[in-house]
Image 1: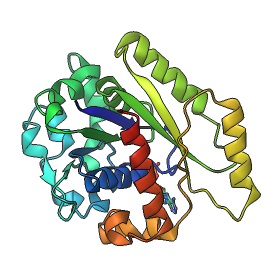
Image 2 (image 1 turned 90 degrees about the horizontal axis):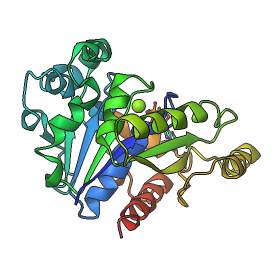
Image 3 (image 1 turned 90 degrees about the vertical axis):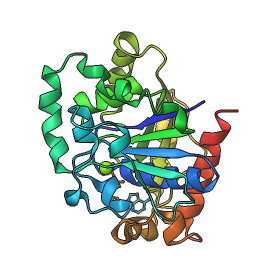
Length: 256
Ligand SMILES: Nc1ncnc2c1ncn2[C@@H]1O[C@H](COP(=O)(O)OP(=O)(O)O)[C@@H](O)[C@H]1O
Ligand SMILES: [Mg+2]
């Protein structure tokens, strides 16, 4: 049975893409068959996995516009144990947010497109854009769960109530089975009290499942995308690689 996880937070720079790439690659390393879908026109997941994003003409955008089949958009990510596939994105996707509004069943386009390939994967991870627009709605309508990265910074809780409200609306109107599988703290800096305070504060105020694994601030995680590699291929011994491997274990445990 496959599980589809939308990695979402309408704030930019909180670690959505870093989490999508590295969670996917660690799940792949553990023998799971994984598809990662880049739903952000910035294409950072696409370039972070070593693809030249602006050379691509078979992306999620062409799939959503019904110009190509979903199978045609799938690329294998080399070096990832034969277990990781990518549906890429690039700047063309920026137009989709408006264009989808004129489509029939506009909230269900991604879900419908994924139907024929869902069962080919153990996990489908969707890296959402930093907005609660139609692309994120499509991702959440298609998904089983939402994983919310929270950056350990002073404004961590800002905007979270809006995100949770959006998820509730989608549950009520589009996808009754959707739930928040958990929040994961990112960029934790053990040298500052602030990171610790943020974690304590969110734990006290947020009635959601919180992953035990906390992702540390680790320069290797920031460097890896410029080499087009996930962290477990770039620097397996780094603290970032260890953390994402533990997060993958927790995600797998939730299925059992
Ligand atoms: N744990 C981390 N340690 C160090 N840098 C990180 C970490 N997580 C993310 N970053 C860096 O922070 C920036 C924003 O992260 P990103 O994953 O792109 O966020 P989002 O997708 O939410 O916009 C990127 O430059 C990324 O390399
Ligand atoms: Mg991103």
